[in-house]
Every structure is written in structure tokens, then in C-alpha cells.
Length: 299
Image (cartoon, rainbow, N blue to C red; front, side, top):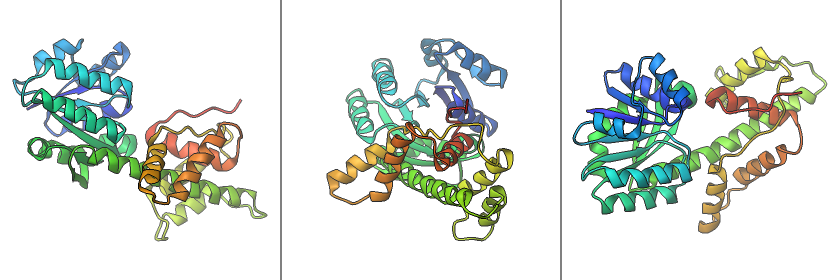
């Protein structure tokens, strides 16, 4: 089975290299020429056009998308359903809204094509070494790709979550929780930084990451970040929001379920675009550390 990867940015390229190293035949494509050149330099076979990619795949084609959520991914799915055949499979591994995924699955099904939504977590390290995957879609298509998903995932990091939209629904809630966790860390370290004590924040984060109840990958990342930049002087405390927490809050409102912590963490991110608190620097640096997200450098 040959897997066609569309989208060779930070996540897409690392995932492609991950599974290629495990013996999967991968052919990549990206509209950006520089991204194609980088992938080729790293040893990935790259097509120079979408048409060339499709021609290089098996009769039963599998397309794995790692593209920006929203209009770009939705248009790409629409274009692919016009040229793929019955039984072919499209996998969306981005942070798409689950409503879009349900709609894309319905549109693909009309053409006899399978659409799988694959919520993906783990940042750049997970993409290269083993991600956490939450997969939704028709079971008969998912079964075909389960060996691939399990190789892409870390140990025990793969879950078939159910019908179309389930994978991206889980990723939406996952990211809402992530917002709240990082906000709590930012506020805690903000208090330490403002206190009368001279804490070495990298040492604090390190000890908290060894045996404490709040031990976590984010805490280990914080230790590394503070070791490199103890006061986070190199960046501004501006923290962007990518949509998932907003979608989670909207869904919670629909279901009349309280999610105050997630809601507040989103509001703080919005507020961070106007101010420069140390707590926001912590959250911004954590996002850059695990996912390569852009930060605003201090002037």
C-alpha cells in the first residue's frame, strides 16, 4: 500500500518520515515548492503536482491530509472527491471542526469514497516518534488503515472513536483541556516569578516533573524552556487561539454543559493579544516548544 501525503509542513513531513522509517511507502506533495524541496532532501519521495501524486498511487488510493483546517482542507477534499474512485480513502489529520468532517464524510460517501477524520496530538516530537491518534469514520475503511495508524501512533496511542466526526470531536475537547492545563501552569509560574522568593523556575518545573501529581509532558517542556530562557525575555506574552477551544465552548453551550475553566483560558488568550503578562509568556513558550507554534519576539 502506498500512502499519498498532502501537506509537508512541520507536522505532515514529520509524520511522513515517521511511517516511512517503519517501512511504509510514502509519496508526498505540497503546493509550496520549498516544502517539497525540504522533504526531498530528507529522503521522502515527492510529487511535483497533485495529478502526479495521484498517478503514482495504487489503484485503490489512500490520501493522508496534513493541511490547515477550514477552507483549504474542505476545498481539497471537494477536489479529491471529483478525481478519486470508489473505495478510495481520504484521511484528514488536521485540526478540522468536527462539523466539517461530518459534512466531508457525507459528500465523499455520495461518490463511494471513504473519509476518515483523524485527531492528531503530540506536537512535532509525537509526529516524528509516535503520535496520539483519535480516529472517526466508517469502520470498514478504518480497519484497512489500522496497521498504518498503529505504526504512526506511539504505544497505546491509537483509538478508533466511532462514526464520522468522532476523531475530531475528541481532538476538539483534548485541545480545550490543553488550553486549561497550560493556563494553570502559566498562572502558577507567574505567581512564583512575582513572589518574594528567588525560585529557579527550571528547577521547580523539573522537580514537579518527577513524582508529583502534576508531573506531565508539559511540565518537562517547561523545565527545558526555563533552562534556556529563565525570564522568557526573548518573547512577548501573546498567545494565539486556533479555534478548537472556541468550538468546544460552542458545543458545551449547545449541550448546556458548564466548561468555565476552558472558557476562561480562551478569554485570557484573547486578552493576551493586548497585554504582556509573564503567565502568557509561559503559555506561548510551551506552545512553541511542543508544536512549533509562532511566538512574538520581544523588541
